Length: 489
Length: 82
Image (cartoon, rainbow over all chains, first blue to last red; front, side):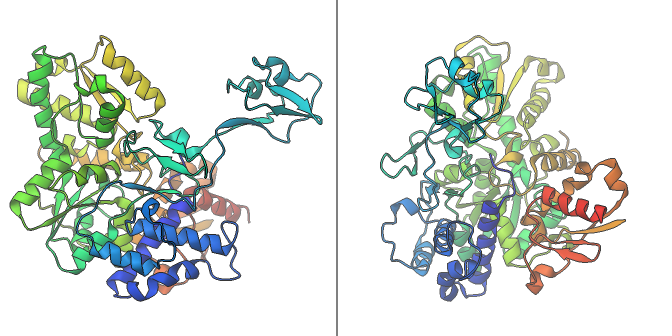
């Protein structure tokens, strides 16, 4: 995947901040149509082939930020203000959570080995003589690969003494762990197969053209904030370390944005862990089934359902931390609008199917709200969460291995310390093609472990597609915040 | 001595400055001795419209739109060599 900070990402964040700033200043309607031109004015140095393409890119990215399903919009004559109206009118957000910006898609060629002009046309010709299928010939003093014959074994690349042969990948396809991205046979533009997609968001973070985006809900949240609705923020534990200042200053910042209450999803993680431990005792300790896996990661739950059905029966039925905390929020303030704020795109899918969660923002999107409102987090006073205090293990949920720690803690809490030996954990840190085949194997074999923690994102939620901060840096802050808890774990 | 003041105002932090916290680990011991590193509250450049965040002030000169920590290290190295 791409580095966390790059120009595609920068453009998206800065556009989100600009849209929100104009919206809160009541100027978005009059100015939205000008933004593409202002971002790529005449005689400026184009990023793409020309300023007109740049303007089209900006226009389409704004559409995704308005939550428009770009593939479904056929009428290109419509202004951005039309889409803004459309976004402001909608009562609810819907699926799909992702959208492909066809104009940005580079129509990458199929993955293949390619001989670059570093090829010296040498006499030894190790590429030609080591190719098992005779796909390489020397034409005009340079090796050429017959793509129809090539079996992609990579021998030629290994053998070339000049490193002249490269493997050209298709970033979105090669980063998709489940093969959900294909190409339209005519236009060669990327297409997402939603029967396969697990909403992990890896494609959004790997396309160097930013051609796949999640459909943002910033406008929906901004509209409700501006209308003075009673909004409750549900913040995921990986928020620790995403912003400057302390966690408790961040609570104040959210209240300044307009949220009436701020709940900590880490407390939901405590409830999830307790419930999973009860399930573990009922199902695994009793011998009814051989193992169990976590249900907190929606991309993992979807992966099991769609791609490893034989594993599905081992995945816990316990509601996710988000579901638990949202239920509490809605029970306490039934008229409230709940907004989950986290690192995750799959949560957008989960929330659409959970009546207790109205909207989902990523940390990047929340950052755009802070910028738009000019909030200096580190200058604010500290404020407590409005939810009960979470334990250390609840706070540690978003790091790889965090779920196992929480389950271990609650097993000894519920069944006594000696029982914790009965939990034999195994961890999968990040869903990729290799780890999915390991999970397929695990589902069918006898294993010496009985609890499998799966995190779709490498490093855990701190490595999610919507984060701002470096996962290791954030992980360290999560750990120290977790140690500060006054209620154990 | 190269004086580096890194803005950790909200805008700079969100637009990429969060990763500047990694800088101490990324500089060599030798380089670290030549750099006076300071994380400072919002320098106010974003609000004045003079360029784009993240901003870093190096020996009194302001650098804008430093997209990632590696780019910042390059600028610091250039200043060490000066």
